[in-house]
Image (cartoon, rainbow, N blue to C red; front, side, top):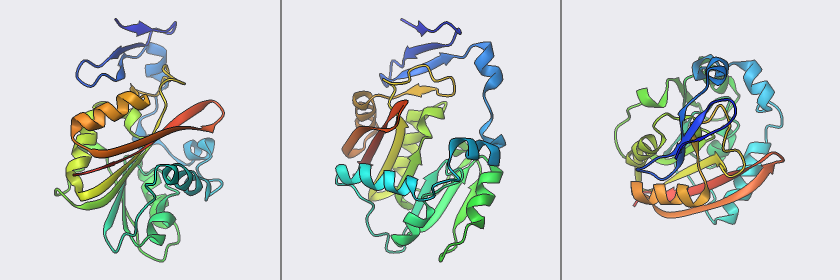
Length: 229
């Protein structure tokens, strides 16, 4: 049965993937949602992304060390960051000897990423995930941090990411824990640890490891690493 909150948004369990997803947004939340391509400096400043440059890397290292899935040496291979925004992960990838590619609908964010000082040139493309069509088996690592919950067809896009990975390549996902925030007006999918693991297994990932940790006071995040067989 659909669940609805007072505003009129309706969420349902997706029958194929068994994940809570948004079926419809109320008029108020439709009117206040910002298109990803329009996100600019004010948005990332409000999030705090542009402050505390090491915070994201520390968060990544702490969570994935717990899962025994720290970032391996890149040896010159390519790391893809999906929905990179004003990424703070670039220095981490460069330090681990990856070539970096980011994609994001926000042209401002992509220009910001390219403008940051780096010992190795980085590439960022202003496009949505749906428009990105690389050759299969291109990437050693794919990172999607706080992206999947915003995608209209999240499971299908995560399945596409599997095809882009090299055999043995890793997908790192960071998503909000839907048990804490099942009615976020900006989200289309509400993952829980069990449902996320089941979905990734159904898609065809292997060695799926995840943990849920409270990084900010208001909600927990799920940190997940899965491997392409």
